[in-house]
Length: 65
Image 1 (tube, rainbow, N blue to C red):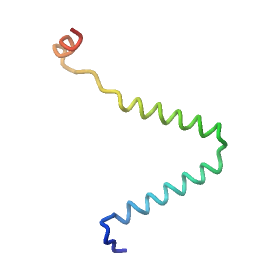
Image 2: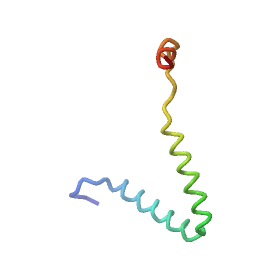
Image 3: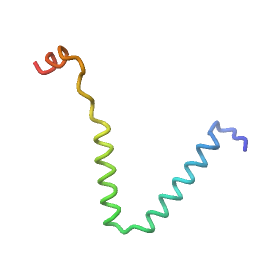
Image 4: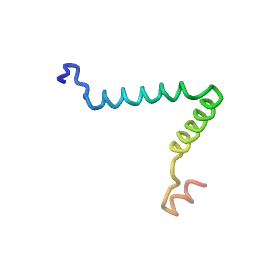
């Protein structure tokens, strides 16, 4: 399908599939299960934001001072 707004059709189809899967999961789970899953996702996102330590030993000493 040709789009005039510049969006990628494959991206749109993938988004629709993900939204549909999310809606199915929401219907299957109760509120307590959803809260647990959301908290786990937030923990994983926070861990991915942590910055790695400097690799250079001299730089590490300089940062600690």
